[in-house]
Length: 386
Image (cartoon, rainbow, N blue to C red; front, side):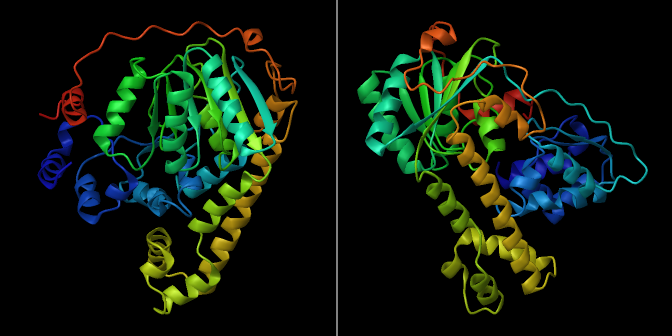
């Protein structure tokens, strides 16, 4: 929104029953002051696991949510997540100072018994690419193919369009808001069959008849993998989650870890003003600026990132072990969340497993085309901002 829209909303906050806001915006002094002038009944954090997974090394303002909650008078707190391990749940509770208030925890199983789990290990990139083409061509209905880069999303989308005859589009963080919204609506209305996407796609998407999710690359950890495959089969009918792996795929995620975390030398050089943002990258500089404002010493910040690296590499190792497994996939996946498997609907590890045995429903028909009102107009009508 533009500055005038923001000013108008902040001046009339008491008119609204619900306000959706990012941690970064709430952390701005003038925005926080506006919210402090009204009474807030409930402070809700959706996808609350992101406080732990994004906060330390991606979007540090998430780490300030407990402080912001306190500054807003510590109203009732609601944390929502589908992918928090027992340890993460305890960590989240410990970050919020609720005094004598009592925690109530409501949990449902992470198990989605209608999603058939399958992993395959291929010998090289060509085999992997051809296997993807075969699966996308054979599996009926809408699907998502997850990849690790914008370049690969564009490349595979073009390849699948040509080789399968299906309606395929690429979705990633390089698209502007209008393009993203258009693709989301086309997918929701069955005007697109397959989305080839980075992890930028999915959060907030609730299409209930997605029949398959294929991971062409590894997720960064099992929590993200569970989140991504959970977009399939929300109508309760059978769906498949397939992970395609070749030895060495983990190097992509390892590179992403290395690219996001500053080294000891970078930390020391940046605070000594020997290195600049241009030298270490915008994302690393933003993180170091945040931790510098917390008045932490250089050794303490170096230790913080060393510990974060250990956690992320351990999570990646668990992801690799899952990818290399050919049996007991559900127990491995649910065990990560402290659960036991109650269903055996999964691959037995055969490369030529039969899709017909999974019992997938037929592909839906395309919805009638509707006029594509631009996203800002739709949101304005939805929330009655005019």
